[in-house]
Length: 321
Image (cartoon, rainbow, N blue to C red; front, side):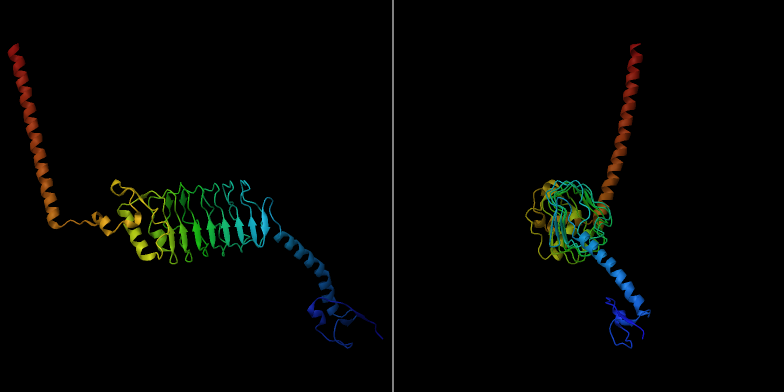
């Protein structure tokens, strides 16, 4: 009689074939399933070790930060650079009130669960391209109180889930690229208040179908003819016409300085639409012709007068001799 042996196996295929001795993990020594069972027994400790390493890595918390319930708070720690090796399941990251000057390219690559990123009150002047390439769930981004001078065309590229962007209190912010917010179809709140903007292209806002609130107060707006398309679009498009409408004032030209931006009407831009009729053009042509003739005649008379004076002066000198 051939002896039989029993084995405890974690692999499902080990118990998938019946034998003469019944079902379960009882096989004749040397049968095929034994090799599968042995492989599973050897792999199990390795898989457990890998799981422990992964769990430890995902649960690590950077120095000077506090981590709890997917929230990593590194605010107010006087950091000059971003902390490395965040927990992989981070959903809310606060780096506010530090001295961070740059964000490394690809910094957010491993944090696909990130929903909120708070970078306010730092010394950032720009963000690297494709920073949000893998941050597909990022909804709230706070960049207020920094040193941004412009918003580049690729600044928010691939951050298609953004609902709110705060760029307020960037006193050096003077330019927003017409394609800066392209692709942000879910964006509802945009704060550009208290910066250095004197002009904002309508094209920069036309690609935001979900925009509800736009805050633009506290900027030195130049309320010339170029501002009319933006104001007209705001009145027709924004449901809640900026919560800081009283703060949005014209800085120039002098005749409208201090005027609330949203108090300007079509009548305010009437001079921008003045058109000339045929009679106006004929009158201008006639005046130009008359001025030209007068100029020629004046030059001719001045020439004759100068010539006469010269001859008279020469004749006087001859008589004295």
